[in-house]
Image 1: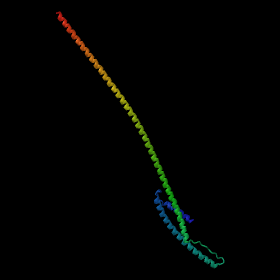
Image 2 (image 1 turned 180 degrees about the horizontal axis):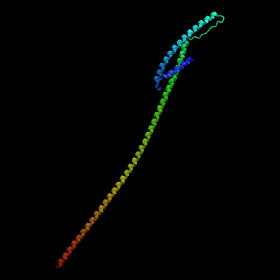
Image 3 (image 1 turned 60 degrees about the vertical axis):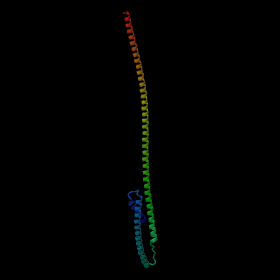
Length: 216
């Protein structure tokens, strides 16, 4: 029973003295080893004191048995007092140490599981963050492609409008040239007519003067 009580005390002591940081595994294990060595020393001291006390009690009981045997030989009874040998004491310490080792291994396993769980959560969070960034990049690229598409369409439309304006400009230019040619031709014709009329007038005037001279 006392052994289990000591085991419980060891568990409480080890748990209470663990590092405040559950993920600092090396620090926790070093502290547990230190606490374990202290406890083992105390257990050995207690076992030695207990053994001496039991031996003293056994000697007292042996003396009492001898007195009773001398006064009443017919009712002599042999009292068997269990003695803890050095081998048994060491075996008990080994068993308690084995329990402490098992509890330490369990504690180490729990610490490792906590670390693995924390790392898994961290990896999951990182994965979620990367996926979110990937979605944002894809969204940005889609918007960028759509913007480029609209810009290309606007540019093509502007080029088409520019080409139409160039065609219209050329048509207006050719029309103006044609109109100028027609105007120039009409002017030349008018000049020729005027010259012909002037020449005719001169000829008529000359003929009139010649006719008057002949009459005189």
